[in-house]
Length: 119
Image 1: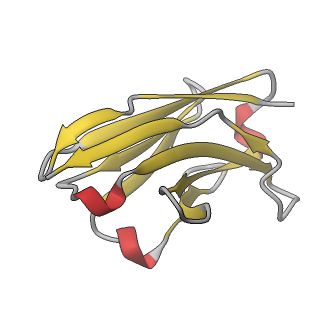
Image 2: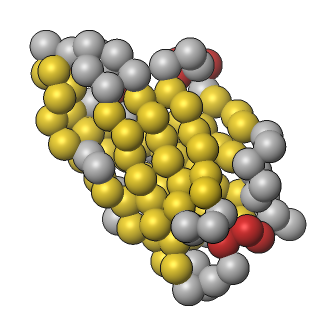
């Protein structure tokens, strides 16, 4: 079973960039598809991005294409979410998540990290 811990959230000004990190432990990192979800105030949790176990395949929500980049480093057991030139609409709690490559369900979740963009 994998444990996930996010870091890197905080408060930035509109137009700034930030990178979130997620450290995984407790299991073989390379067997997991990794993803990021977010939940804004008053809204449901939504998919943001995912990356395959090898890092070769990535998927993004339409709303973040072109401004977010997901990546992973299997040697360091980490996954990242680079968020460029952000606006207040992306303010949310961001969650790192993982699913075993043979499963369709994200079964493992971090505690979340708050990312706030001020105007």
